[in-house]
Image 1 (cartoon, rainbow, N blue to C red):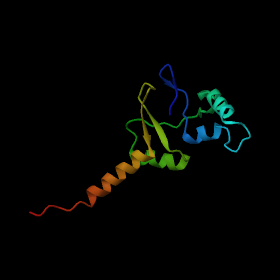
Image 2: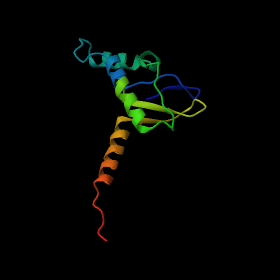
Image 3: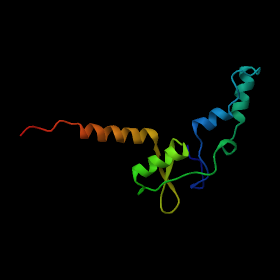
Image 4: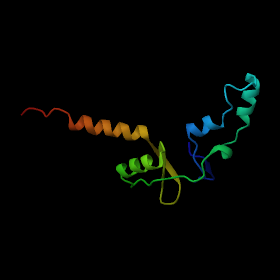
Length: 111
């Protein structure tokens, strides 16, 4: 999830960030105490502030390579004026790879 402030990207929150900030399930706290602590966590506390981004013109292979190198599962897509206009995720890339492979392996119609 990409948190924004007045339309400007200020960070990114991953599932790993949320898991890392959540109280441990093996804690001696009871359920209501755990729920209270969980509800006190603020986005700004757990978000990563140094966000790797791409533009709509970034080649898909470059975005995928960047995700592998940085060990991240998604990239915000930014417009020329610095606004977030989308996200590209591992699932998006896998979906595209499958479509390309299926198209390449499709039988050629007989004439």
